[in-house]
Image (cartoon, rainbow, N blue to C red; front, side, top):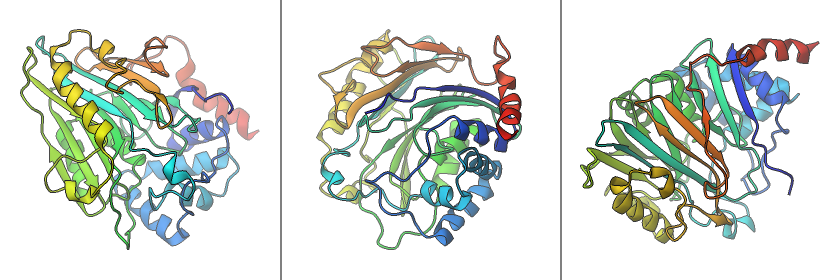
Amino acid sequence: MSTADYQTFDLAGPHYNLGFVQGARTERFVVPAWWPAPPELSFAEACAQQMAEIHPPILEELRGYADGQRLPYEELLRGVCRRSMRLRAPYSASLYPEGGCSSFALVDEDGHIRVGRNYDFHPVQRVRQRVRLKPQQGRPSLGMRGSVPGGRYDGANDAGLFVSLHVALSDEPDDLAPGLPFHLLPRLVLETCATTREAVDLLTRVRHLHSFNYLLADADGDLAVVEAHAIRRRVIEPERAPGGVEAFIACTNHFRHPEMTSLQRNRKLVLSRNRLAFLYAHAPHLTDHCSLLTDHPSSLCGHSGGHTTLWSLTADLTARSIAYARGAPCETEYEPVPWPGQPLADSRERMTESVFLIAVK
């Protein structure tokens, strides 16, 4: 397998330019062999209309990305609007064992809001890019994206709002209506919301294509998890926790709300439940939360199959600080990253315009 793509982007400008630069510097986007066939164009266009109702510039970024890769926009849009999380045989038994991502957020005894996150998946996911954007329209943000254009799997914005996603394998409707893809929802949250409650409102009112959990935290200490399915959305609120912290919440890969659990039927959830129990038992008592993310007996830090930790992050939303590790945090150091919206020490925030002009000559 080729080397993973841990590129970093620090870009500012119109959304079309942001997309063009990322597309030009990233491997060609193709629908993976283990995904179902792309939906018909009319389905994808109906999904795009719902994106436009929330944040129209995101479609301009997708057009720029398609042009940067010399792909037809319609082909890219069909790939972005994946209809189902089901897998083609023979991949279903090997690539998605049950999900592996873990996140937590707490209000510490010093009043600081801290978050931690490990993103786990099969190493077949090569694109693991850190993207820091200052768009002309929308809030500045910083986060990680996978292979699908425009998306975010976690991140924070200039207001101190944090979001991370977690797949929750469950039943799917036989007749799925157009909606919003999982990977674009954190991006829409980061560019259009300033608080957890604004994000909760967005995530509970829109139509979802896929079953996912979304952990949210903001700089005022408001914490929540939104459990989302195509037919239902519910909210998990934080708990007051022992160990000196004011509030705590964690999230892994299964639904907990009593009105959501039936959607999972007999899915294998042992590892997800074990990681969640470990987080609730240990995180409120620790002063060094980075060490929590390197734990192996609980499978928080994974090194095989679909439980391979591809990146990790820690953040202090009060102090406006965030750091990412490229790979498992037991093997790679956390690298501090400038907070979104803050100027960079060099001129890289002007690179969008210069690279774009070079690319189109």
